[in-house]
Amino acid sequence: MALLIAVTGLYGAVAYVVELRQPELAVRSAIGATRDHLLAVVLRDLRTMVGLGTLGGILVGVAAQRVVGAALGVEVEAVPWFIVGTVTCIAVIVIAAASLPVLRIARLDPSDVLRRTV
Image (cartoon, rainbow, N blue to C red; front, top):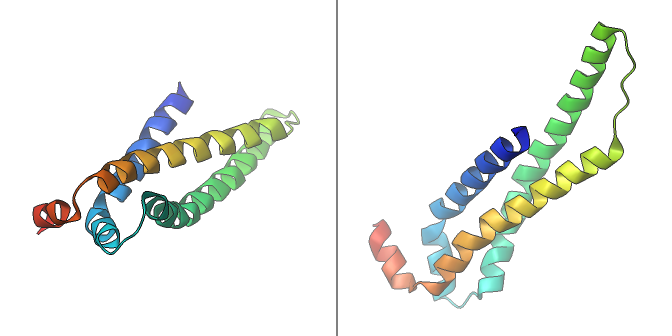
């Protein structure tokens, strides 16, 4: 259940960030950027944001795991496959959340997008 809530929040935040960049992406499209180039630009910027957030989440999660384990008097080991699975899930969600708005923007006429944002 927690994963579903996290995925929904992450998808919404990433899609919103991409939607805010509609005018920029429309200008890039107007001067000849392909759909793949637009997606690459967005993913390059999101990579930093999501990478730092994921790294921070892993560090806080491992630290919290150790604190709770110490408080309960048990030794809790970090499960590497769980961390890898979580990072993979986050990466897939970010790519999907960025791809859908970018593909929609790439199909639109750049002048229409710019006219709506002014």
